[in-house]
Structure formats: structure tokens, C-alpha cells
Length: 300
Image (cartoon, rainbow, N blue to C red; front, side, top):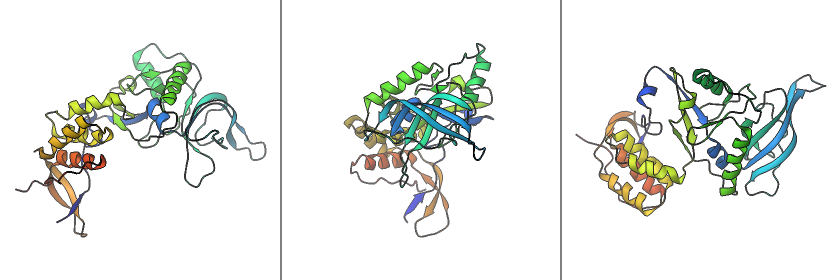
């Protein structure tokens, strides 16, 4: 019988013990991932003002001062209306992270970082609260905030409030891969600077070379779910050491109960699945490595 896995609980988002308690989880986006995922990054001045004819508030680009990234294009078209992404009134200096959309003439706003200086509170709890209020968050897609303060986060979880430091980081990242657009990434529990007693923050980060060693280390974890997660992420590192490590996982004996469905349209059923083997096999296939398909279901 052929089957598809309906879900693997905890595989793509391994939750810490604290997150599993009575707290809320939140998701924010690193500057490194935003730069990698964008077609263009523009340092611009934007203005939000009332339309004299309709009375509606509208945000427009007043000027593009610098283009930090323009992948595949000598010139990137301007965004006609930013009203949905920029809700702060008046004139503001911002970083616009833009990406192209099929069948649309102009790009869409992926993210906005305001570059307005401010003084962060000295008290740690008040500082975290101020960061949370200003930093866009949201699973799969960041939601804009009503704050115009400069607050951003890097791939290590470090919160940046200095506008020039934000621009330098983005510019450096853009110079590393000026023509590459890579949206792949993963959520890492690195948002400690944002957290309080009732929240846990995950930072969406790119698959940088620095992450590779951590995934290989996690592949040797005594916890099966951790090994499965690491095997899944290693699909982004096509080298001999990774391939050899994944091949060893094809006989991993950890399994847990999953809900699977029959390809022939039968009702879902519970099954004991070797999730480490499955993740390793899928990653090897993604890396174009042909290996025999292992037994994926533990049968009593």
C-alpha cells in the first residue's frame, strides 16, 4: 500500500520545552534572509499623506536614494503605492525589501525597516516590550506595525536599533550575492531579546554555511525528532560529508506515530513512521543522490 505523510508533528518547527508550556509563539525575519529573498533592496524616502481628492491616506515613494540590491536588473521599477505596508504618517527614511510577483508590473513589498533613530529603554523588560511593538512579525508573512522606530534583527538574534548598522549589514549581505534570490530558510529559537514570560520568538534565517555544522551535530542527537529535523535541513548542503551522514540515517530506528493517508483515497490511518529515515531519504533525493528507498513504516 502506497501512502503519503499527512504531517510530522515537530519536524519542521522543533519546539523548545519553554515554548511547549503556556506561552505564545511569534515569528520574526532576519535581515540576512530578507536580503537574500528580495529581488531589490532600496534605501528610500517615503511619504504618507492624504489624497486631496478622496481624503484617503496614501503612501508613496518620494525618492530612492540608493539601491543596495537589484538582482538581475539594471534598474528596478518603483513601487507605485505602499499604503498597505507603510502606515506611519509623514516622511520617513526606510529600507524597502521588494520581490517580483508573476503577472504584476511592479514588485510587491516583502518588508519595510524604518530608519528613524530612537533611544531604547534601559530596563530590559521595557526594552523587550519596545522591540516587540516595533518589529513586524507573523508566521509565513510579516505584518506591518504602526511603529516608525528602527528595530531589526539579524540571523543570530541580535536586535539592531542603529539605522546605519542596519544599512551596513544589508549592504554587506547584498554584496556577497548581488544576483541571487534565495527564499529558503528556517525558524530558529533565537529571539531571546524580544521575549517575556509569556512569549517565545523564532527568527527566520537563511541556510548559511555557518548553520551546516549545527545541523550535522544535531544529526547525532539522542532525540529522534531532532535528528529528523536536522536531516531535513541538510538537504540545503550538497557536499560529500553531508551526503555520507544522511546515508547513515537510512537505517535509523527511531519511529513515532503519524497520521498517513492512502493514495487510493482510503481514510487516514495511524502508522508508526521512521521519520529520520524518511527525512534523510527525501533530502538525498533533493540532493540528486540515488539510494534505495528504505522501509519507512515500522510494522509490528
